[in-house]
Amino acid sequence: MGDVLYIVVPCYNEEAVLPETQKELGNKLETMITAGAVSEKSRIIFVDDGSKDKTWELIEKYHSENPRIGGVKLAHNRGHQFAVLAGLMTVKDLCDMAITMDADLQDDIDVVDKFVEKYKEGCEVVYGVRNSRATDTFFKKTTAEGFYKIMQAMGVDIVFNHADYRLMSKTVLDALSEYKEVNLFLRGIVPLIGYKSDTVEYARKERFAGESKYPLKKMLAFAIDGITSFSIKPIRLITTLGVGALCASALMIIWFIIGAVRGNTVSGWATIVISIWLFGGLILLGLGVVGEYIGKIYMEAKGRPRFRVEKFLG
Image (cartoon, rainbow, N blue to C red):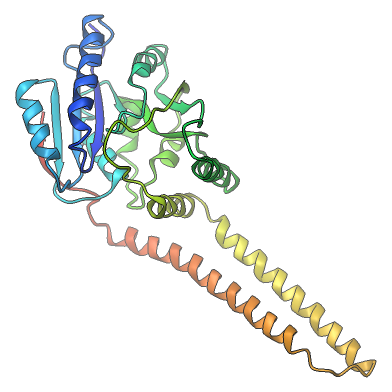
């Protein structure tokens, strides 16, 4: 008998794609159980992140028809990262390993077998990594790859082209439960845990149905959260800019003194205006970055629950 696998799938307004998702994942799990790759106690858990459509009703329906399909209903919408964490923390004592993936069928479910094979070889974490971005627009490809490069430049240990399609062993899940931060960025937290890891490459598909839950605005907010949650380099960058601005000001003073000695006393209104805008912009930028960190400290200090499970269909 193989180890127990739980597949955790966060959902938010996914009624359009859920029928096909539960069908394909159900078939995959049955095939793996029949082949002896995983235990017959393995399950698929859909996490309803406060959906406003019929997502939870569908999950209850599938659970009544197939005992291997379960669900976690959050009491309030908390966002993708918290939905993933809620599902993992709910099932961590019920499984030997857990795989997280999105509900839109863009992640290739056929590589689940490779995930499990890597786990059996001794890997505690297996990352799903995109082998190509051919299906992305030029803008999406450029910004996405730029995000990973910026994160790495900021000192964040992040796997390039990896989202949240990964396998984690129970050992890693127990370790993850000890990370209590409210500003959640799992792509940065999981590599921090350590243990033996490996990657599996796959081709990401087009979304099967429905609309993306990550428009540009949310993607930018996600990127900012990731950077400020794991690096203080933006604050150090502001310090560097401040020192540079101070040096530039000193040079300008010297230049004006030399000009006055030579008798060139014509007022340079353009220089004044440019200087005001430059230093005003630097000040506002600095206040914004510092404010971002202070806001995160404020959120962490309150210590509010990160999520609340309303129902669990296990």
